[in-house]
Length: 101
Image (cartoon, rainbow, N blue to C red):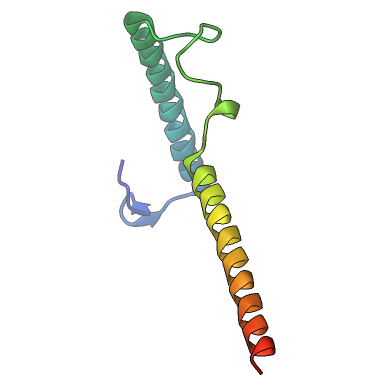
């Protein structure tokens, strides 16, 4: 089958032809997906990967530490200290200007 939008002596495709091609493509995809799932199950069975409820060394997804969260907390901590020191320096400058004026 020709992948161009035209075939059969340069006649445009009909809707029925296009629909048949789409249905065939969907069937091919379903078949490939079924084979892929079958191969993955065989691989898991052969290599002893844990199945649904077996314990693993990894914590559950909701208990894993996200590196972005750690970086965000560290940055927030640094910014809080920077604000504190800037405020303290402004107060010191005002006291110096007030006392020595």
